[in-house]
Image (cartoon, rainbow, N blue to C red; front, side):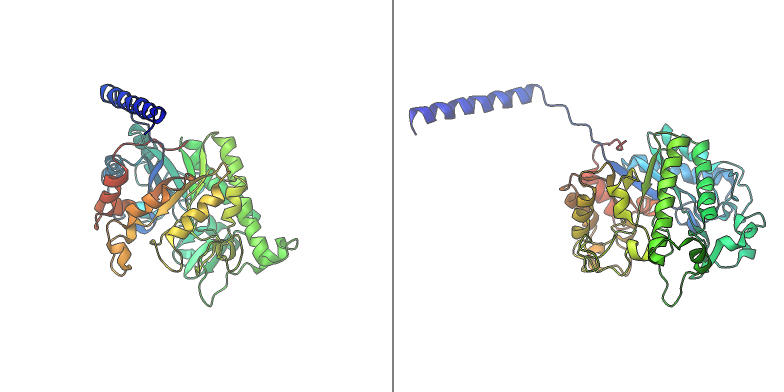
Length: 407
């Protein structure tokens, strides 16, 4: 080693030693973590809460608070609370009846205000509360006479379409689009929710051998479109754009997010799509152009439900995360990943889901993509019970310190 190189080596060593001594004397402050750590709290059919209809107001409130406390304990920071599961309400709505999932009878007041309580108690715990609405689903049956007499779908029977054993509002009717916005945004006007959240239900998922009967609406309103599919997509686009604009007018700064089915289009149908072979594509089957909503910043965040394991041939988690990251790249729309906690350890699921480390590997993989700003877990029941220990593994590997949600 020459004199110059020896001198350089000595200086470098001294510099390293000085840094090491400085570190020992004054360790660097830990960097604050900012990421979405959310869970969905589903009320439809009493999936997560309340545990059954007909509980007392005190019992319902106690169960709700327990879910919020569990979120805090697991170092989550956001609860996405389903407050309009089936054209009904979990608050005293000016437009729709009280949900049957509270009392067992649609339209019967539960004796308290679940959404108002959820907002207050979540904020008291440092949690964000996102109000989750299903825009078009009316009922898990097709008989309008089973709805409470005051239900809007009974007052306007031509708004409703039976399909696949369920009843839906027709997205192709401008009056319906205006009404569902009024009904949902009633909550935004009354409560300081942190976000309005839609899930994956726009036009209903396809049912083999059945067609969604919107012929009359298409005949009336679809004349300017090349085909029915383009008209249906425009109907959903209008819902998204109009809802975003109205949220900003009613309560500026409130976020608007969507958690669609995880596949926009397969690459076999569109070169811009993902290398997947999914049987459902949001663009073609649900008529939701979710990629466009991100690229044109119609939504503040998107949380695609990437509910498949790493290596799944039809829709590989390891393929879809980078695909969505590329979609979000350079946009103002935040990307979160919806995670299928409910599959962990569940009977009948593939071997990958029997491994408690599968979900932790998801977060490790996603961390390599800076566009991914966090994760949302489906859903609260599994967060609490954690039968396979998958959530505990996520917390141990990734959530050792609290985090603030992106704003």
